[in-house]
Length: 172
Image (tube, rainbow, N blue to C red; front, side):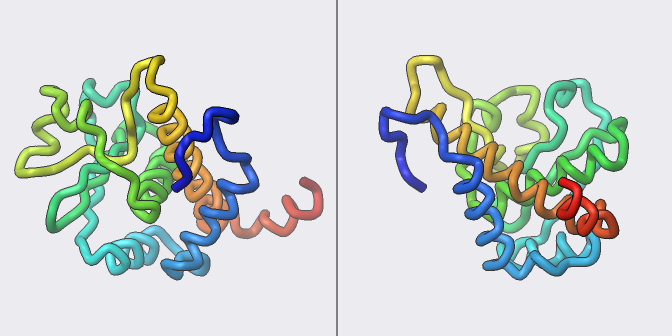
């Protein structure tokens, strides 16, 4: 990933979507037909079991989905009370962080309210908490979130709305 160059705070949408498409192609995720197949392929690509848990926890009130990485497995938390489409989008977003190999967020990993989910050596991944003075970290965080969201959008198009994709291409 390119470092912040001091001139523009983020990559263009086209650059991010192109990188997301490349990651999906690299891991053979462009032709998946369902969430179980997607999960199995991401698991095979990382060499780790992926567990998805729906939780009803006030600690996640502002977090729709969260990826916690362990040495031998990955855990993705989704808010149980969210609509199914929203949970699926959150899952796809976390898969985006996984296929890009985004770094750990020490602030969330060490958060006492999150510690029960990361117990046993887990690290909260994909999110970087920063101060306003830390523009290079802001740049990386913006790119990480944009990359994960681009993957979510591409997967969502494939799995959640495949029969309308042709219409969207014709009619925008």
